[in-house]
Image (cartoon, rainbow over all chains, first blue to last red; front, side, top):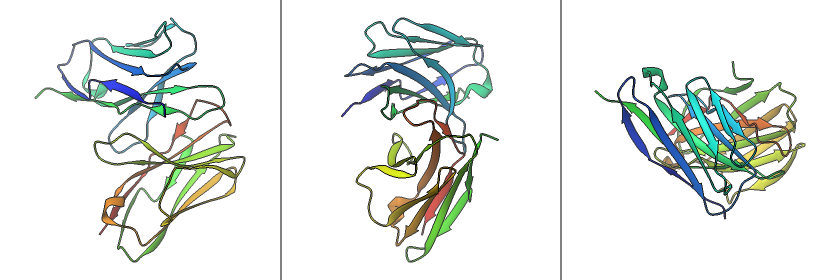
Length: 110
Length: 112
């Protein structure tokens, strides 16, 4: 079946740093989505991408839909402590269910 | 308030107990999902209901039994669970064929 490889699996951030994570697939998707999950909560949709090459921002977050339709990345600029959590990418083709990546866990450097 | 409400938030149960998890949405969605999230594992899709019909059953053991009485409510009935079933159980809803899943906050289940 379809699989999404998300990297890195985890990373430490220092407040103020920019953060980058990505997701790759063995098959193409027509829609890419990025979710964030805070501790003890369910995932919340951050950004949805609908066209190959599309670049979309939501505040300090920027995501891009890869031109091959097999990848996507998420950047967070000037990170703050509340950015910690697990970020999931997800791909979708019309009428089908979402396929989720394994998640990137963002933690704050002690 | 996410629009999808799950109860209880936390549940501890013995291996011989019977319990149920409840999910409720008032977003006008017509598809509902159960996911299992174990520590350091990807989200695992368990069941999908679309227009109140089960359309996906991802090789889930029979000790998990879903029920969808109407488009707003989804239950997961639990019976004779194992310790490895301890996990966060997430409910989500969407429009049928849609991608904008809305998740609940989950039920943290511990089987002792």
